[in-house]
Length: 559
Image 1 (cartoon, helix red, strand yellow):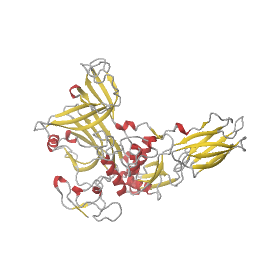
Image 2 (cartoon, rainbow, N blue to C red):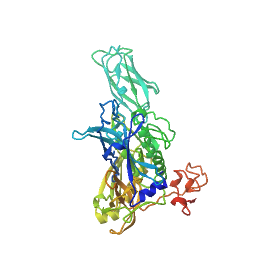
Image 3 (cartoon, rainbow, N blue to C red):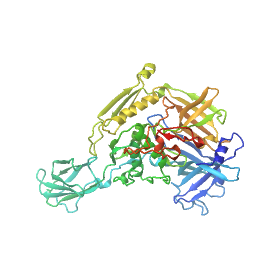
Image 4 (cartoon, rainbow, N blue to C red):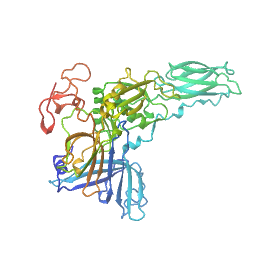
């Protein structure tokens, strides 16, 4: 949290002296301040797309002088000499010299060095950086494990093969399998035992006939060759459990995908080596993920749209598309925050009594707006997993459920503007699809108002998903409430500026709370604190009523 003096400098119209700090952080965490070498660059941008929300990795360049070869990696005195700098970090912070003579900075972006470019004309280098989400982009989860290939024993006499090997979602576990010939001969005669180190016997396989054991989650076919099988011929292989989740909040599933750990227990998942390995620390000490934002989002999902999901990741699943299929259901956003950690936000904010205000009487210098019918969605079709039956690993998920919802008033006004979605997730009642579709129609049945404006460094602490108020005399805007969907920070301009896009849709003025109780009712959601200021992050999703407390926060009493 920045100091009051810092906030005063942020709000000052004239006379403040913003300063940019550039830090190099090696892979061991050692920090070197390279601000004296900074020339220009450091234009940071965050974007939240229109639903269906798209995950985007941020990128920025930092240009540094190199007249003393400080960044010449082949010079012994260089910061980069014999250093593996690909994947090291650049942290950009903006701050002020405060009246008491101290310097205070606030991080604005953290990127991993992706490329270094030495300019052939002048003595300077460009460090090209990407934020932490680049580790998710273009990546696969559940890559086909090498151990899931049957290996014939070196002493086999029969020269047949084992093919058609497949595992079943929600049945297969991590284990080793041995397939051993128990009766020799050709196809139709020879038999094999099929035994898992955890599952035990999956039955007897006859050569030439497919073995299917749904109870053990295994399927395979043995075929004889030119030389018959003999007793003792065998094959070995292993199975890796699918990344799979059952009866879980969508936010908890995203946490599991990113960390390989369960949200509720902080225990490593059985499939942890088939997903990502971001820091799983469940506190503000987490270096990769903003734990508080995940905690708030997960509580909000539980509170405002209660549904539990079941689903799995098949072989070589595209990570971004898979995570987007979850974010879609609560119209959320996954992005990298100012401090470089990944944040999760929901479509409906936690209960909040105040908004940051931007006005032409303060620092707004340019402002315009647009509305487009292209952004209207008034007819939604959803193909989804409607039945609790799951495919083998070599089959695709059958989206056997279909749901349609529409907004009649919007269709009458604008004609049918349809969009279709595919959701590979199952819930017992199908509430996840109905809830998503109704929220989408409520949000996009009218053309949203997109306000673009440029302001000063009063927006340093503003991030994607924040709700703000915009006032502008020319266009007659008075405290227009909207959600920030794009921010561009240009620290190498004079004066430094921040460009913002705010979207107001049909739900922007909605303030959501849920009635909670001071009494422990045994529902796992209570008791709540009787005072907002002392409430936990989860408690703040519940409605309070009373008078405004200190600092603009409500000092409210629980209903």
